[in-house]
Amino acid sequence: MTNFGSGPNVHVTGRRIVATIIDAVILGIASGILAGLFGSNRSSGFGLTHLSPGGSVLSVAFALVYYVVLEGLLGRTVGKLATGIRVVNEATGYPPGIGKAVVRTVLRIIDGLLVYLVGYVIVLGSSRRRRLGDMAAGTLVVRG
Image (cartoon, rainbow, N blue to C red):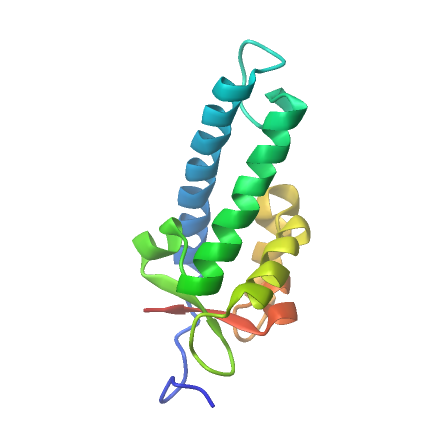
C-alpha cells in the first residue's frame, strides 16, 4: 500500500542530476582524503586511479556505505537532502531498507556508464522516471 495519496511526484530528473553532482563532489573529497592518508601513485590528479590499492578499496567501500546506509535507512544522501528528493520503496512509500539500497547501488555500475548518460536515458524513457537500479529494487525517487 502506498502512502502517496494521488500518486508520488516522480518528475524530479533535474533534481536527481544536481543531487548526483553534489554526491560526486562529496565522494571526490572523501577519495582525496583517503589518497592523502594512504598515499598516491602520482603527485597530481584526481580520482580512484591515483590511489594506492588500499586507498582505492577504501574509496569504493566508502561510496558503497554512503549510498547503502543513507538511502537505505534515511532515503536520502546529502545530495538528495539538498535538492528535496528522496528514495522510497514503491510499495510502501517509506525508505527502501538496506537490501533494496544494495540493489540500487550495485546497479549504479551500469546506470553510471558514460558519466550517468545510460541512467539518464533510462530515466527519461521510464514513465515513473526510474533508472535501472530503481526498477530492479522496486524504488522511486520522489519529491519531499
